[in-house]
Image 1: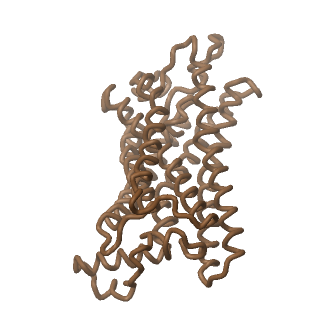
Image 2 (image 1 turned 90 degrees about the vertical axis):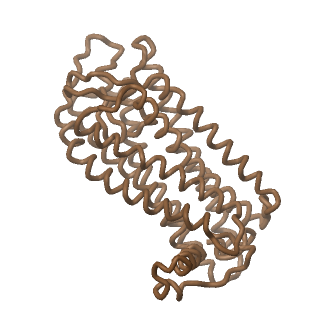
Length: 363
């Protein structure tokens, strides 16, 4: 399962950690064996994480390069949020090889690196989600109210917003820095980097962090995105413009991708939390199935980081135009790229079809 979900059982994004049973506050509960879920992780994690690692680096790396090298244009508010989003997604994907190695050989990188990698993962996982919310709010204000809050001469407000996001995410990673450590797991016969809370408060920590993640990491951002984009849809439907239907399709794709990638994991993780709290009676078979389900569904969450460049960038004509200009300028494939070059207004955002205040063509 995901690092931020350290409060639940076994996996850090498919990497096996001690289960709830091994941390049970009740000493008369025998720990469940983990052989089947461990074998599944050993086969599933390295291959899938390798693919996500490559796609995440290439896609988000290209976003950063195109944004920083755009010609004849100034970076706008949405550009800046997407630049930070690409950085967060890259830093998140960089941690995936460590968890892939742990799934196969156990944690071999030492105690300090365990805390660092876990903290980096948590920071950037939350940052990716919160920056998506910032982009939604930015577009909501620009389209629904037709007001450009972040003027060019006041772009420092965007920097302050991004700084606030990073500070909040760093605060969320404090438990990882404190309680993640390397321990020997007797049921899997490997050393593993995972959350090890004091026995007297283990259950409290796990339940608290679990619900913080559910609300702050999924429910609040998704509700905010849904609110913003639903009002954007209504505004675009009331406006006139031949590009509005393209914008509507992309809006639906944005919300659908977030929902489809994140909901399965959150439902599975919530079941795991409720089982730990005793809301219903579980058994070793249930824990095994939950472990495997967490491994699979957490992979979809990571996949969303690779989809961000597609959803927010590659579908936009502005990005294709700026990418084509970059390819022509660097002479990589000028003949292939030249037909995609267009001459946008200098007021336009790199990721929009027109200016930030446009109601029908921001995508």
